[in-house]
Image (tube, rainbow over all chains, first blue to last red; front, top):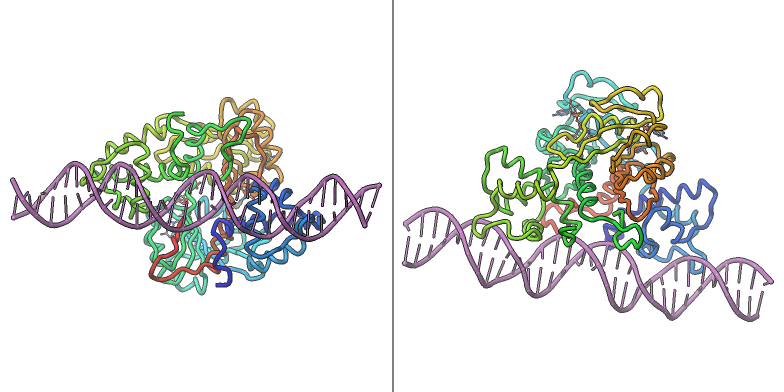
Length: 219
Length: 219
DNA sequence: ATTAAGTCGTGATTAACTTCACATATTCAC
DNA sequence: GTGAATATGTGAAGTTAATCACGACTTAAT
Ligand SMILES: NC(=O)c1ccc[n+]([C@@H]2O[C@H](COP(=O)([O-])OP(=O)(O)OC[C@H]3O[C@@H](n4cnc5c(N)ncnc54)[C@H](O)[C@@H]3O)[C@@H](O)[C@H]2O)c1
Ligand SMILES: NC(=O)c1ccc[n+]([C@@H]2O[C@H](COP(=O)([O-])OP(=O)(O)OC[C@H]3O[C@@H](n4cnc5c(N)ncnc54)[C@H](O)[C@@H]3O)[C@@H](O)[C@H]2O)c1
C-alpha cells in the first residue's frame, strides 16, 4: 500500500485528530497550532507534529495548520468517502447499545445487519438495522468484511470460524475469549472487564502525583 | 508502593492471565507451561515468562508453573479479595448494558450505584443497581473512587469536574470527549468509534499476509 | 545412572514510539 | 522595514516494551 511506513500508533490517532478538526471547522476556525490540538486531544504537541510529518509538510512555520486543508487531507487519507459495511453478531446488552448508536457521527462505517440465535429477536429491527437468525448468516453476509462480536464467550470460537470461512477480514471482539484466526484476519480485542481491572490496579499500585506529572495519566 | 518497577504493559496483562488461570483450575489442571498459556491468551511465551519474572521465580525449570500457586499469587497481587466500588454515570444504551453485566465474573469490582439526569430512569434499578438523580451525586457518592462515564460527550467536562471535586481518582471514559483532570486522577479512554475506524484503517492500509505473520494481528 | 526432552529465567538485542530541543521560516504589530 | 513572537519539522536522545537465544535445571524413561 501507499504509506506502509506510518507507525501503527500514529494510525490509531488519526481518527481522533480528524474528529477534532471537524469540530474546529464547525466552529468556523480556520487555523490551528499543534499546541492547541495538543490541549484538546491530550496528545503531546511534538507527537502531533511528528504524526503529521509522516504525510509530508502539512503546516507552515510560524503559522500552524490550515484547518480546511488538513481536514481535506485526512478525509482522503482516512477514506471518509467510502462506506465500510459492518455486521454485528449477538444482539444482547452490548450489541443492542451498538445498534442504537451505530457510530452515526461523521463516520465511514455502518452496521448494516445483525445476527442472533434468539428467535425473540430475529425479524425485528433495532436502530434501523435488521436482525437475522444466526443460521442464515452465511447467506445474508454478502460481501461484508468487518464484524463486531458481542456474543457469549463460549460461542466465540465457533462463530469466528464461520466468519473466517465466509471471508471476514476484521473482527472487533468484545468477548473475553481470545479467538484464533488465520494470519490474514485482523482482530482487535476490547476487553471491558480487563480495562476496568487494569484501571483499579493502576490506581492502587501506581499512585499519581498531584503536581509534577512524571507519569502520564492517560494512555 | 511495593512493586513500582512493573511495566505498565505487564500490569495490563495480569488480569488476562488471572482469568485464564481460573479457567484452568476449574478444569482441574494443576500445571501449565508458558507455551500453553501463550496459545490460549495470544501473548508470546517469552513475554509471559518475562512478565512473571518481575514477581520473582514463580515457575520451575523443566516443569512449568503450578496453577494453584500462580493463581494464589495473582489473587494477592491483583487484590482480588478487596472489593472496589464503582459508580456509573449515564444510564443510556451503554450504561444500561454495563449495569446488566456488572462485571460479575470473578471480579473485585462492582458497580454500586448509578446516576442519570432523566427522571424516567431515576428511582429504578437495573441489574440490582439503584439509579439516582445526577443532582444528588455528591451526597450519594460516599467514598467511591472509580467512575464509569457513559453520558453524552457535551456533558463530560461538567460532570468530570464534579467527580474530581468529590474525590474520584479513576475514570473509565466512554465518551468521545478528552476530559481534563488534575495530575492525580487517572483516566482511561475507551473510544469505541475510534476503535472501529482504526480497525477499518488497518484493514485497508496494512494488509496482512496469509502466511508469514511479520505483522502481529492483535495488539 | 544416563540420556533425551522439556521448560524456565534472563542477558542481550531489537523494535517501536515519545519527547527534547533547536534551526528555520512566517506572521504581526508598529 | 524591523524586531519580537510564534510555530513547524526533524535529528538526536530517551523510554518502554517485545523478542531472541541459551545456560541451567527438572523430569521421566530406559
Ligand atoms: N455487557 C457488558 O457490559 C459486557 C462487558 C464486558 C464484556 N462483555 C462481553 O460481551 C459479550 C456480550 O455481552 P452481553 O452483555 O451483550 O451478553 P448478552 O447475553 O446480553 O448477549 C449475548 C447475545 O448473543 C446471542 N447469542 C448467543 N449465542 C449466539 C450464537 N451462537 N449466535 C448468535 N447470537 C448468539 C444471545 O441471544 C444474546 O442476545 C459477552 O461475551 C460478554 O462477556 C459484555
Ligand atoms: N452506545 C454506543 O454504542 C456508543 C459507542 C461509542 C461511543 N459512545 C459514547 O458513549 C456515551 C454514551 O452513549 P449512549 O449511547 O449510552 O448514549 P445515551 O444517550 O443512550 O445515554 C446517555 C445517558 O446519559 C444521561 N444523561 C444526559 N445528561 C446527563 C447528565 N448531565 N448527568 C447524568 N446523566 C445524563 C441521559 O439521560 C442518558 O440516559 C456517549 O458519549 C457516546 O458518544 C456510545
